[in-house]
Image 1 (cartoon, rainbow, N blue to C red):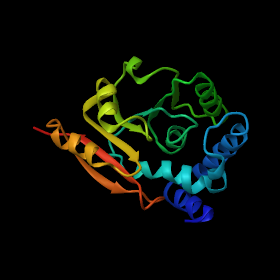
Image 2: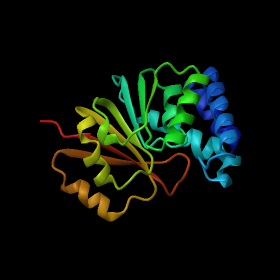
Image 3: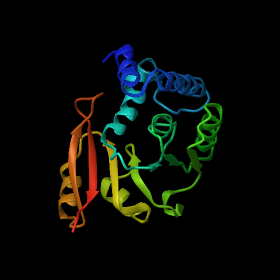
Image 4: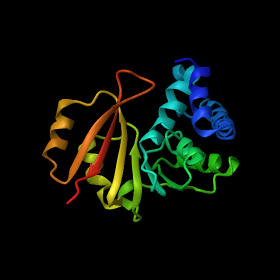
Length: 202
């Protein structure tokens, strides 16, 4: 997918105003990337496809009733800041690295994201619960579900973009009698998947 095509997907789905705000954020990332390594330099020319749309596509799997979102290990702002631009509810971003957390806070202020909250700690220190929990390639799925379980409600949906999901991770999920899961294909990378995990009902 070209950069123009990736931007068009976001504009068509969320509106031109929000696409413009995503563009402003991507410019901040590109500038800051010269001072700290937020994203791989080789991906800057494809930032709309590799990072913006890769983040925005998580919104396609959100339940309509969702009003709060937790993004774990937000790093350079993907998916957290992109989600905060596109999502109507509150978005809490957990980033333990102080310098990156400071960058996220600066982005939230410059972009006037009143729904964005930055927590500079590990997820174990977070005390609230959320409707959606995401994490982009942070730890193994099993460890992630354990570490952030206290942030989940009975109806919380986990939206976890991964690369290839290995057999061990799938086996661990199949053994988990409390949850059900399914795998969606990534729009931006045919070799990557998005793992959707929900609590079993009844």
